Length: 355
Image 1 (cartoon, rainbow, N blue to C red):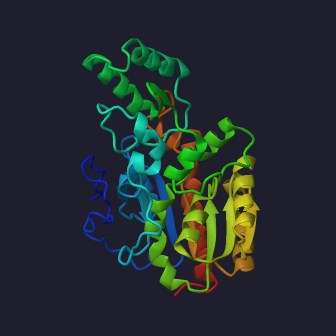
Image 2 (cartoon, one colour; image 1 turned 135 degrees about the vertical axis):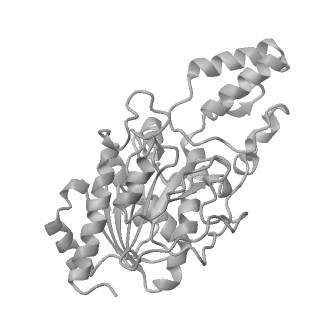
């Protein structure tokens, strides 16, 4: 029976502070890697979405994890994968775990009645300038000593919009470089995008790389000579960054991403970090037909890992208008992930590339 996420849990099969999570699952022999696969999306999706995802990915039970165990922000995600769960480790250096560790410049302005230690799920929509101005006016009119009712109202909006204190009585939305830090990317990872708005959009669906690296860390002893990766919906390279931070050499990466800005950011990171492997870029998952996959598998010698997180536009609770699950225009491309993983497995088995 599929175990759905519990708001009190979100430790999956274990996280650093709580190493004993759900009992390990038994994978059917034909599901076990290699090739390994790893799929991510929002945990609190509409009814039966995760049952459908599990059914299309070998009926493997998801693990639901909150990135608050790996960072200074909450982010509840579900992961379906056929990776081992024993032997996981955190990448070093360990990430900042509280708001003030991550953003120390805010501490001197932080009022004592704002008791937040973690930010809420990183949402890259711009905090309302109107709301910010209203909250600043409340602080100004009260000489920095708002009533209990005003404190509650200010805190409610700060939590909802992830506003931080940037001056006396002044709060503001997170900047792109601050979001990069919270998601485990290096500062200015998205600097190559055209504008601040573009950078925020590019960060919108990115992996929290500390969390993903913890899950993928089990692969390091298996691939001392490097990994061959098929990265679907690769975005700004969250999977690639996570593997790099673990210390796994990227021999081949076939990165499939529709957004030109995202592809540019990944390509820039690849060059900046001196990757010695081969990066092959593709634009559309739908173009990865069986023939195209056969050609890629012949070129790279088979994939060790298929990884990705399809768009969550129609799954997220933030979408009040078209939250219609996997049948939605954007989130329906999950079925392409399922198709591609199954076809990669079939092709590699037919070529004798699997044990």
